[in-house]
Length: 231
View 1 (cartoon, rainbow, N blue to C red):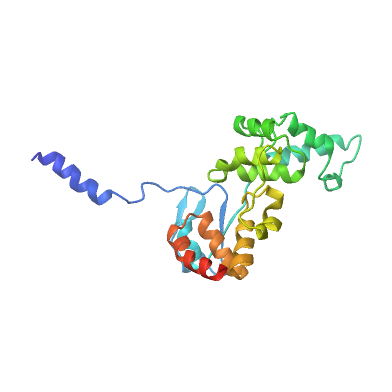
View 2: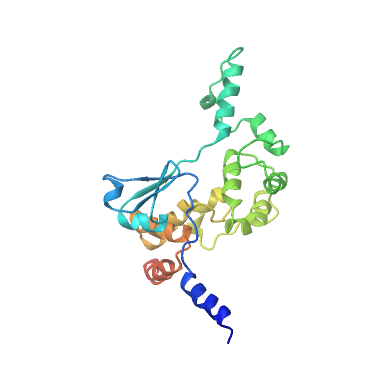
């Protein structure tokens, strides 16, 4: 009955769902074989040229979006190497992946300044995990994200021999052996799809992407196919 409130409601109803601002992906770069202006709208933000479409529509148009993450840590490492080289030359590629001194750093949780390992949550994870190999270290990074994070406690128990490593079927063991029977990597999803349901690499990659992007409709559409081809 209030005319002002009614007007606000009518205007708000039309605005609801519209984009409220332009945002820039921190590392996303769009690559095309043609002039972008010919296939998508382009807008400017300061001196930066941005796509007028959001990233989920770009791939449908055949454009490639790559994430190039800039890491200050790489510059720090390079500077440290240059300082060290005044006395001794170090080749990072010659340091073995099972280097005891390196693993001791993570076991002591002396990880301040180490990319991906310096948050309080990750430090707590490292203290409980007690990593013994390079595979433990990169598994930790993969686990420490929404979704896989719910498997952290089980992963720690299995790694330390407190919980039995269990496989739904024995055929999963070669795929999940390195992660103690827990599916962590998207590549493992692809391997399971190929091994159990006879998916091609292309089909397995589509399933992987759907799971990674939480595309529920695509995942559900694959359910019957996966089950039927796995029998």
